[in-house]
Image (cartoon, rainbow, N blue to C red; front, side):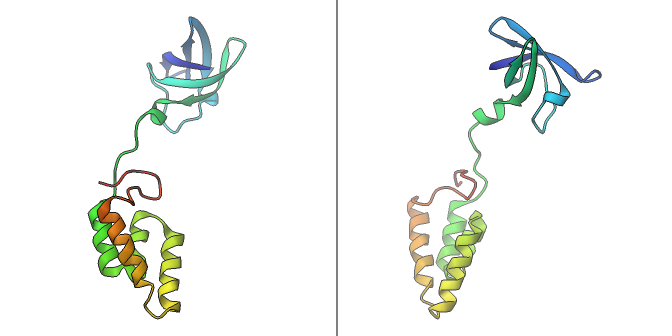
Length: 137
């Protein structure tokens, strides 16, 4: 069920969730988020009678991901040092970066073409997310 926290008392570590004009009691043992509950938080939970269990915060999932890595920095890294896969390390694609480095070593340098092509893709916006799915700045 989806609801929102009507009240929460940090001293007793318990509170009340309202969902569709019904109230459900919960305690911190049923809370499954890294941050403590706060009044007004939107939550997803399972109802067991008048108690809420497996309470999960849903507000964090509704917020779009924020850009952390820079597209042009990754593109310049790919252009200058693409043969090492450093741009893929920067974006968090570690296995792909190691494969790129291995290809360069095996082909005695021809893996640099891969880095050059990815530099063009980065400048053109075709590669536009990091390994965690966040957009590039």
